[in-house]
Amino acid sequence: MKKKILIVQFRHETNSFCPKKADEGAYRNMFFLVGEEVFLKQRGLRNETGAFLDVFKKYDDFELIPSVGLVASPSGPVTSEVYNFVLKQVEDTIHNNKNLDGILINFHGAMVAEGHDDGEGDLLEFIRNLIGWDIPIITTLDLHANVTSKMIKCATALIPFEKYPHIDTYETGYKAATIMAETLLGKIKPVMAYRKIPYLLPLLPSASSQLSPLYSLAEKLNEQADVLSVRFTHGFFPADIEELGMAVLAVTNDNKTLAEELADELYKLICDNLPNLTVEYPSIDMILEQITDSDEGPVVLADASDNPGAGGLGDTTHILRALLEKGITGAAFATITDAKAVEKCINAGVGAMVELELGGWSDIEYSGGPLTVSAYVKKISDGKYISKAKMSYGVEFKHGKTAVVEISGNLVIITSISRQPYDIEIFKSHGINPQDQKILVVKSTNHFRATFEKVASKIFTLALPGYAVPIPQIYKYKKWKGNI
Ligand SMILES: [Zn+2]
Image 1 (tube, rainbow, N blue to C red):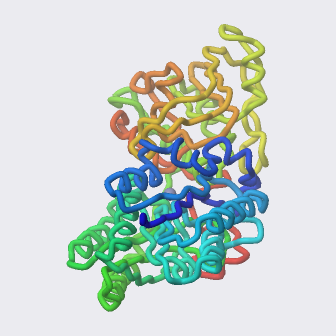
Image 2: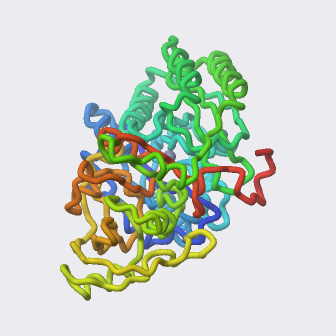
């Protein structure tokens, strides 16, 4: 008889300080899949679930049981309606499929839901209460997971991404599914050790010089016999929960002592390096002074604080305002979210001039307020394109109705739905050749690097006002009691 593996996919990175909730509509903008759809819509995608499906294609011994596939853009907490819907779907699927042999989960790891500060930990506990403690639960995590003691207690193994930008989503899913298959075939017995590091790590790319000693050690530790996975998570600091911060996760084949030793070794090196794990952000004036006509290729300005991929609302106007005030031209913006402005452009039509109160519709303290501009409507689109970035290859990005406008010599992609535009395809699919621009402004913190670095002459990251400022010290935590 085939061994039965339940597949659960429920992802959210929650910014507790963002006022917009992750409701059903937010999930429907990305993935709101139930039952067989979970597999039908993701077969062939380069994400974790796509990798799960690829791994089990190789075996005749297993039957995969779908439950839910829910993914939403980062924002404020997941609504209780969505969270309870997932609990019910998972419960019903378990009820209808007796004698499960394993559960393979695609989580982010930094989910806060209404009434659940530890979204993933509570769901894992709910599942354990239904199925008991005998069968393995293996879970993939984002690098920015806030790993909690309940997640550790309830999961057999947690396998986070290693890279930021997350170009290893598929590989991580592949690894987790392979560990599940070999566990159920009796070839291995994963055991895990864990160390929490209650430090709020700035949003550093994994290739940064500050992190390279840690990745070098992790790589070395992974080469040892009996090691299944030794990785560390960065944490996601805009979540206000008690168990915030970094973690080391060491998974070995039935060797708890080794797992503890490896976790200790990496934990110690991280602790020793904490004073170096900082970032300085230049002011916009300092950056604009460094942009010259001799730059070979566009200069990229990363508007990290308004990154919709970290809880930004996508509407801030600080950079466009600064460029217009200084009379700078030749910039292209991805993106400013403003559904009303898009409607105005659609009503005016391609080729028309429109007067817009652009962006800045959220709290003025964060957004900078709307900009009054005269805009020439160059293009109207449905805001859809297929991602070619490695971390989401094949996934359709939906920005809602979209307008491309020209404002005083600068191009702005105005979208109706905010979503991190980290794939340079956002420009190409809207008729803008990124190489032809003097400046590319992107509302992303680091993921953009995977596709933008190839064309950029320089990259600057800004820490302007917004809901996703990349500096932990500015957040007013109520639940997290650690020192910053
Ligand atoms: Zn992440």
